[in-house]
Every structure is written in C-alpha cells, then in structure tokens.
Amino acid sequence: MQPNRLAFKPIDLDSHAAICVAFRRDTFVCSFGNDRFDDEAGPDGAHYLEQLRQRTVKFPDGYVHLWDGDRIVGQMELQIREEPRIGYASLFYLIDDMRSAGVGSELQDYAMRFFQRHGVSAARLSVSPTNARALAFYRKHGWRDLGPRPGREFVNLMECDVPPGEERQMKIRPVQRTDYDAWRPLWDGYNAFYGRKGPTALAEEITQATWARFFDPSEPVHALVAESDGRVVGLTHYLFHRSTSRLNDVCYLQDLFTTEPMRGQGVGRRLIEAVYEAAREAGSSRVYWQTQTGNQAGRALYDKVAKHLGFIVYSHEL
Image (tube, rainbow, N blue to C red; front, side):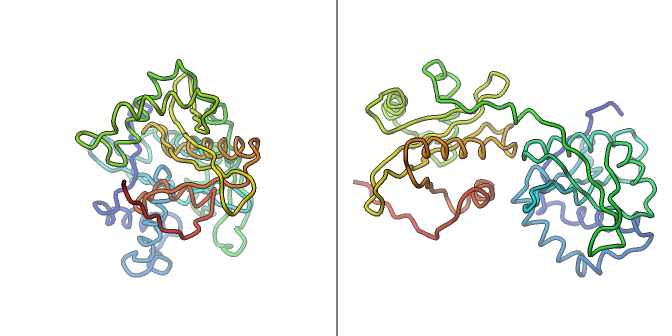
C-alpha cells in the first residue's frame, strides 16, 4: 500500500457503533490475551459507547475511523487532557491484515498533527507491557516508556514529544481592504450556517455596510482574520458597547467562522484569544458571545475558553 492511502474520517456512531465495539474488544485481546472488554466497558460496550459519543462531539478530529477505499480498517481515539494540558492517545488500532501493510506511520503522523493543532508539546498513552508488537511500534516512533501507570499498574505509560506544528505559525491579524475576495466566501459560509442563504440571504447592502464599517475609525465594529500559508482561513467580528453594570465598555464577539478543512485545528481558539487581547488593550473587562444550542462542535470549544452563564436570548424584529 502506498503512503497516505488511508483516509481518516470522524467516527459515525449512528452507523458504525458495532464496529467501534468490535475494534475495542479486539484491542483487549491483543493487549492482554483475553477478553476483558465487558469488565470495563459494560455489557456489549454500553458504557464505552456512551463515553465515545461524548468524546466524538468534543474531539471530532481525534476520534476517527481509518478507511482503505470503502472498508474501515482501523480506529484512533485521541484527546486533550487538562491540568496539566497534554495529549492522550486512547487507541491506535488496525485490523489484523493491515498490521503488516506498512501503514503504521500514517497513524503516528495523524496523531502528531492532531496534537499539534491543539497546541500541546507532549502526548501520552497506555500500553500492556506484554504487547511486544505495540511496544516496538511506539518505541520506533519516539515514545518513551515511563513504567507502570499510577492507579493502573497492569499497563505502562508512554510519552512522546510533539514537534511544533503549522498552526503555531498561523497569523491572526486585522482585516485589510485587500482581503475582501478571501473574506467574502467565509462571510457567506457563516451566514449560510445560520440559515441566511437563498431566499433568506442577507441583503447585499448589509454586507457592504458591514465591510465598510471595519475600516471606519468612528465605528466600534472590528474584524480579524486567520491566515495560514498566505490564505485567509478564518474570521471573527467583534464590537464594543456600553453596559449598565460596568464602567468600561464590554466586547461582543458577534461572528466566528473558519473554512471547513481547518476546523478542529485550533483556528477558532486562536481567533477568540485574539479578541480577548484586543478587548483587553481597549480597556474592556468582558468578552461575551452567543451561539445556537445545537452547535455542539462550537460549544465544545467555547466550554474550554469561556464560561456558560445560562442565559436565554430573546429577540423581536421591528
């Protein structure tokens, strides 16, 4: 098989839950020589699937199936743990006939890119000390054996340094007039996401007025873009306004959007953090925003960088 032949796609639990359970069960057999899966995962993997569903929402780019054409041949489960912030690989898995196909490095490369996108400098995993094949694979790819894992001494903990990735070189900057052709598709995509397309599309004069306001010094509306490899891949718009409960202006982050290929790669976090910095420099003491309750991917990020205060938004058109 040629390098990079595998496709890494987010796990579709509604369609492939049974495959996830079968793969995870086989992992226990490979690691321990017996089926201990039900002891930890519950009958038929019920507890495991419940946990997996939560994590696929939180880390859609970390919980993936490996496809060889139209066949699922493997599974990876990658996440970020906090305090300390570090990457963690819960599962590297290939079906039996793929384990000698020379594609193992693709899994390692994908894992490193995931950890790079999330800005961690190290990652860990657990492995059975009797799983000689897995140990040899991890050591070959730079994982260091730290010995028995505290609290789960029947497995060993391994750690690997994560090299700097492209997202750390990403530039967040104020929008420029010359960015219009790159900004406009993102703006249209953002509006389409919220149903403003076709017959309900935003009026063109609103788009043109919004664009003009970014460059009017008398306006409180501002825009930042994320640039990677010379391409604009994300945007955020924010504005300042008075508050009856604070002396200083507060900052409302109104719009946030990234191109589809860049989602899950830390672009949204970088844009939010840039708004925080801009608001701080402007003397604002608070940044806030709103989103739809069903925006699970967005809320997975927002829960990490801000606090949900529980308010419900009401609106009345005049």
